[in-house]
Image (cartoon, rainbow, N blue to C red; front, side, top):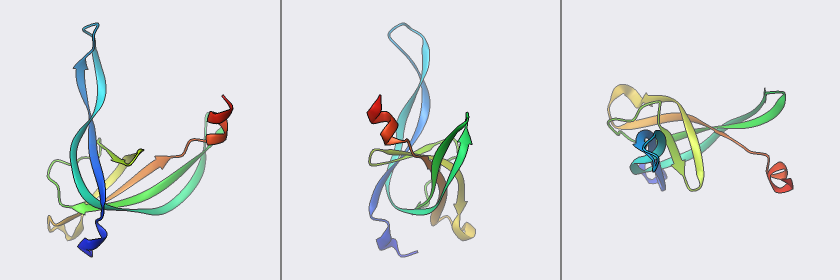
Length: 114
């Protein structure tokens, strides 16, 4: 991979348990690590969820090898949040990670109408 293509700031996030003002435990998404990476669309599809069509885009995010990155994390890029599907250590060389992730697209027409 051409390291010059890793020109986007991406933040790995994970959920942590915290107490709220009522002393109850709740899950909050917190930043874990911010790194340089590339974000490239791979494919798109639509599926039915609860009887409604939901568009979903698949992306490949490539970053330098980062220890501690797992599939239960999320990637934040600009104002978008990506769900990590799989992580591949390219050539098992601990140099680059290729991360397959999805982004669900909300129907903006419905949001504006509400």
